[in-house]
Amino acid sequence: MKNKKLRALTEGAMIAAIYGVLTLVFWQFSSMQIQVRVSEALCVLPLFTSAAVPGLTIGCFLVNILMGNIWDAIFGSMATFLAAAVAYKLKGKAKGFHWLAPLACVVFNALIVPFVLYFGYGITTFGSTSGMWLVLGLQALSIAIGQVIACYGLGMPLYYLLKRTKIFEK
Image (cartoon, rainbow, N blue to C red):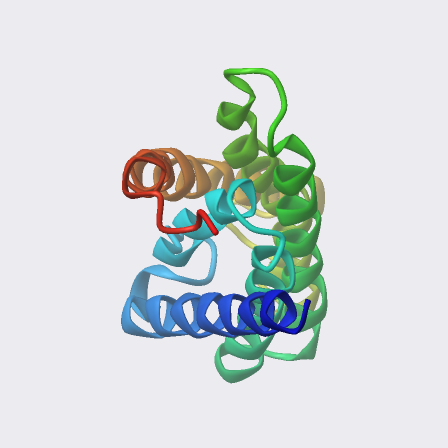
């Protein structure tokens, strides 16, 4: 029992650290209106371990504190937590459900992050476009596209690599 708890704690800490490092290394692409947060590829990890849910959430919180502001840390981390929790719920479901894990990440980030950008960072225009709902919509579209690139373009190959290597099997 003690070894399982230690393993989960270690996995969660490693996931948080990897999330943070990836975000900071690729910081130019990791924030603001047009972003491809490479670390979001890790959104598939809850399909392998429950430790990924707190690991991703804590990693996102810490890096958002370093990169942004408290609103980004709170609400960006909330989007990550919700996506990770949904992905974990898909673990072990019928074959083919693993494709929905990245979709949760795309949807939650596209719904939440534009409000963080608009109200938390005061980004009230998108290019030359203004008007709250139009800007929020364009930000949501931009965030969704970046999330698709990170979560499906990078995350699904990661999923298949981890599945093949069986690194999370106990």
